Image (cartoon, rainbow, N blue to C red; front, side):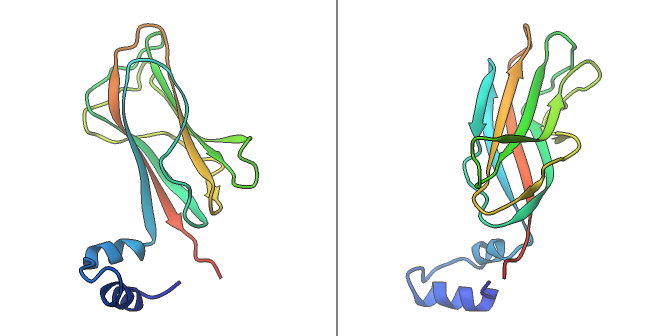
Length: 156
């Protein structure tokens, strides 16, 4: 991987003469985030996040940031399932984390809520992350953002 100074020089001398330093900084951070914003009124079938994994890494955090409050309920609830589809076999979905908004699991507006314990979290380049959201019974509509934080792994 190129270093920050060489990349900034290439950008400013080439096609992007006004490349902001902050943009270059982001490319050299150890982590990056994938996010999807949605408003839900019904079950959402498995949906791909808007970007494939750019390089090998490990998912270190996955959380839902709700736009409004929601009180968990065993009957009228939402369930969020984050999955990973490996580039080697996109047909197989591996569950990474699940958030079940049952009784006792509430959401507070704009307060991140973890999707829980992470499994199958090591990713290869071009893996795809997906989100499935299930509405049970008469759960109230819900809106927010799913955020997935990935720790980069250097490649040789």
